[in-house]
Structures are given as C-alpha cells and as structure tokens.
Length: 270
Image (cartoon, rainbow, N blue to C red; front, side, top):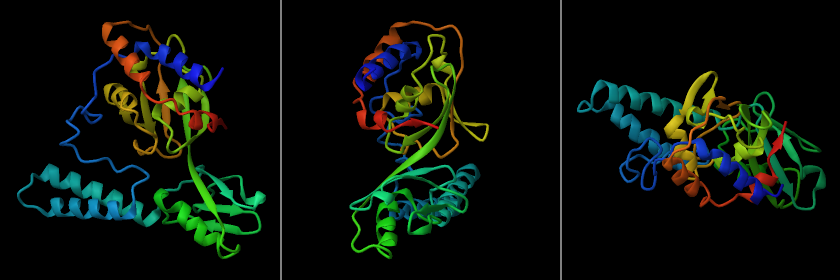
C-alpha cells in the first residue's frame, strides 16, 4: 500500500474519534493566542534558558498563588535538568549522512551514557546536547577526525504502539513525524479500536490522552512538538466504535493534514 493510500485508510479508521474543532486552540482547549508556546524537543538552548528564567521569576513572585509558584518552580527545574543532561536517551536513534563517508552514513543508536559509537571515530558523547544542537555538534565533533565534513543528522525516537492496531510493537520514528504517523506505521487502528480512549504514557503515567490527544493529532502536532521521548507508549484500547456527525468533521480535518511521505518511508519496526 502506498503512503498516500495508507494515510487515507488510517484516517477512515479514525472515524471513531469524536471531533471538536481545534482551530485557534491549544491542545488543552485554551486559546492558542493566550497559551504559552510548548517547549518541544527541538527548542533551542536560548529559548529554553529564557523560559526557565521566566518561570523562576514567577516562582519567586509573591503576587502569585502558592500553586502557581510551585508549578513554575517544578517546570523550571525540569528545563534546567534538560539543559544540563541534554535530550538524548538510551534507545534514541540518529540517522547520519556524512558526505563521502559511507561507513558513517548510517543509523546509530544512543547507548549507555548517552553515547554514539561511530566507525573509525569511536564513542561520541551526547551528554548535554539538545536535539536542536545535534547536527552542528556532530559536525564539529567529526571535524576532529575528518576535514570539513558535511553532516546531516536526523533524530529518531523509539516509541511503543500497543493495543488495537494492526502491527503492535516498537517503532523508530523521526522527531519531526506527526503524532498520527506512529499509528500509521503500526498499520493503523483496528476496526475495534476505541480511539476516544487513546492515550500516550510514560513510565506507566499518562502524559496525553482523550480529547487533548485528539486535538493534538487534528492540529498536526509532531512527535517533537509533543515532547515525546524514547520509551513513550501509545495505548489504544479495544471496544465498540461509535459514529457521530462530529466524527465526520474530525476525519475531514485529518484528511487536510499533509501526508508526511518522508516520515512514513523512514519509520521502521524494531
């Protein structure tokens, strides 16, 4: 099946998701013009630093409620940890394309200690490296072994898709793929899929589910935008499907999302 036909078939199966328009809204239903922009995995160090500083100011503001201050402090701490440790986790993959270097033009898996082991180069640490920095970082690092290397680096995320889909399993998904692409890679939802209860989990805890997840998919949010990391899991329960007028609106919106042929052809099962 071609990627285009696959996308349409998957969209048809997604008819069971109740639709609520998300145009002009953030995934949680808040007006996007009022909501803070999400800090995706592709956010730059400058943007993360600015956000952390903003949150730390809120955490110290006596005019804010204790709940608001505590929330800001927690988010700032997470960002500071990210800035220190970097974005790459064990199991993430990076597709390297190095001009004139076939042995280095391959897909490499991040190992223990956030390291890549590269032919003729050895271990390359990605500790403290953000996704937004990885291409420039690897260009500089390979420049220690090669003369003026031309490097392209594409980050992948290892995700699990379980439940009512055609091919459950682990998938290496480009960070810039759409949230819906992971479902397509798994063969799409089964006819019994209860997509209104679909969720994404991390270490057993739900991080995105139901209407918020539906809205994120409809808005064309990417894996990167959603901040997914290696090991996150799509869970699609089985159950009776439903058909309403709202679902027709939702499927119509899904079909307006550009089909990411590049992503679909470069997602593979692990």
